[in-house]
Image (tube, rainbow, N blue to C red; front, side, top):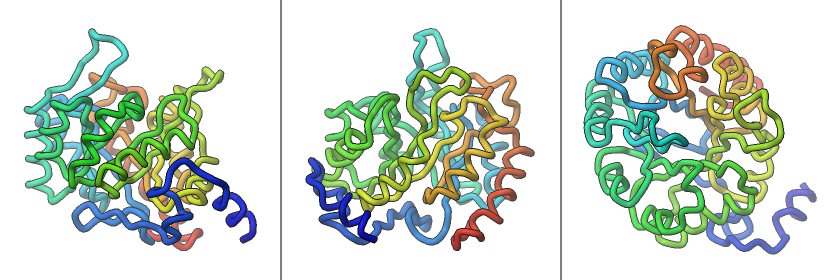
Amino acid sequence: MSSVGQLSSEPRPYKLVSRVFHPEDSIIRVGAVEFGGPRIVVIAGPCAVESRTQVLQSAACVRETGVSVLRGGAYKPRTSPYSFQGLGREGLKILDEARQQLGLMVVTEAVDHESLELVAEWADMVQIGARNMQNFSLLKAVGSTKKPILLKRGLAATIDEWLMAAEYIAAHGNPNIVLCERGIRTYEGKTRNTLDLSAIPVVKQLSHLPIIVDPSHATGHWSWVAPMARAGVAAGADGLIIEVHPNPQEALSDGSQSLTLVHFRELVESLRPVTHAIGRQL
């Protein structure tokens, strides 16, 4: 379409992640899982690793629904210094146990250089969270790893700033990047953030990288997660990352936006007609 050509031909400060220099869609592989292919990839699990029982219960539910990627924060950057900060290395060991038992791929966040070394050793995919999107020193270090990277959009980042952050990673040797739209901060106070669904088609015109959506952090309330997940898939997202907890009311992190195991199963089923309608698979 002419609109694609006009938008893509504009000068951009990023090169390696630009569709101008790489016209074909990139497929980013995490084990046998492919981001950017015909299948919608669902990542699910608790916000934070709290205990072995909690993670294994969540992971079993995730596996039962056919989901292949488990999320869980071993390290948690929190706004308050008094909030639960994660179990660190012990959390990584628990995630690894879930992977070994159930055959799941694991994505978890690195919050600094020290944790990056451990996360890159234990996880299959390294997440760079919204608060670290422009931590350029960390982005350079991530670029030196061989692990696939999940790069979340910053709280108030423009799309160009987000793609420039991806460029840092690619320019330092790692092209295996999946972008994640997780909502941006606006004047609206009813939701935790404002989910920018328009970023999905815009990014897909500007960049060859896959993009997924995080409706959990975007909305901040479990009852709004499912409709925004379906909307993200309908808008062209290549996947979703969903927070799931066996007992959300007792969660140490983000319980209000976490789905119960029952609600998560219902969400997955509700995605099937949407993916079928747009010619993709779940």
